[in-house]
Image (tube, rainbow, N blue to C red; front, side):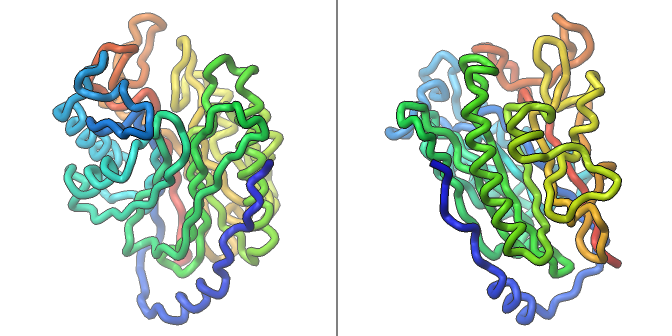
Length: 347
């Protein structure tokens, strides 16, 4: 059954918030990013979760020193993507709990950037969730909610919730942000595809409702979809394809879809071929530059700085520098590359 709660009703809240805010800002834009952290676990066992793989006495020998290095690595990635200006919003997936996020924002080099965070607390058996870091001075939190994916088949393994956050950006516009980590391809792409299609349909239910209640629907969806831009969950269920010459205000557009044709470009490398699992999807209203917050296909990208990559000995070229390769600890960053998007503000 599709999650049937209505999206957060915040229109009156936004109006009151705007009237009460007397601050003005001079920035002309800001950056957001999304990053699959590849298993950001702490070193302590949660009795309600299957996190045995990431404990000191496990085969991975995940200890405090490796955990601290992982926090420092993620901090370095966020700083690099921001080009020394911290991204206003940072979507993350594969984060275990509040403890690791507190460690990231308060006890890693990122502590000087003043991030706050929101995360889901889903029923995923391994205990991994999605989260959003935000710069409180540039993104004023209004409300947030978790979209639970309740599969019709009760025997299916539970998956991650989708995080929905509503905030006000620095020019006064509201922005609805969704952070996703759709069901994996475990068991095979085709066999697992119905799970991602169902999760995408839950997300579509929410965005359709927002298109109905929002006069100016500023929607940003970012996340690891475990599907490529051409797959059904994205191109058909969400209807999120590459932007057209005249975007419809109340349609969704995948800003990385056109780049899928370039097989030397991607956020993830599988069997020697780059492709895009991590998506940046926006509402058409954000592409039509109607005097407010806006963005474009050209303002989306994938960060592939050299420190995030290593030589691909098997397939040639380079590949993401991972934390683990199988059970072997490499001390790298992640099996995914971060994606980012720049927004333009009216002058």
